[in-house]
Amino acid sequence: MSYKLSIAHNHSVAILRIILLALISLLALTATATAPNYDRNTQTSNPNQFHTNSYDDVASQLRIRVWPTAAHAPATITVRAEVTPHDDNRELIVTIDGENAYMSSLVQLEGSRGPRFSELQFHKLPSGAYEVLAVIMGAQKPRATVRQYIVVTE
Image 1: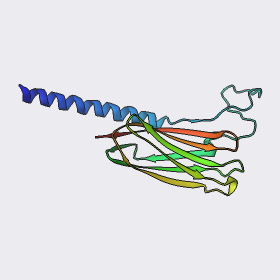
Image 2: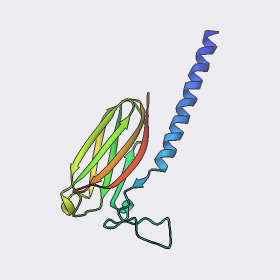
Image 3: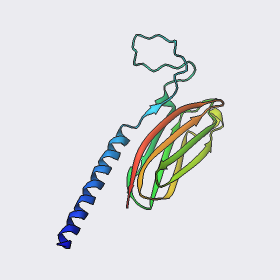
Image 4: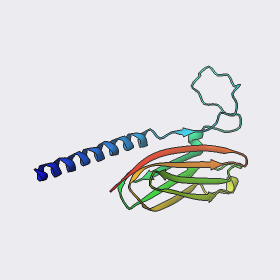
């Protein structure tokens, strides 16, 4: 009887892991790019069109690629960020945040002379679901934010 219970338990754990991986993969596909709307008075014929007063389209300012999006612990996660050069770029901050770990890294951008691509590695990430967050900081406020989600299994 205990043998059958053990098989059932292992089967349910495997199903839960598959469901978790599927959810994280779905979240990774719907990674979002957001930034504050600095010009709320701008009128447009398309109400869904993104407008800012002094900054261009957020998606063209910051893109990230995170791999793997699903891994086994202890995992090494690589984040490659593409930053469009701009005089107001000061720092690129990349964080990985989950219930079991928090890691972060900061890259100085030096305005428009800063690196366009930055590749960061985060080592020995324990199992869990994580949010990968990349932020371009300007002189006074964040200029662009991108999120992606990953999962690390046991």
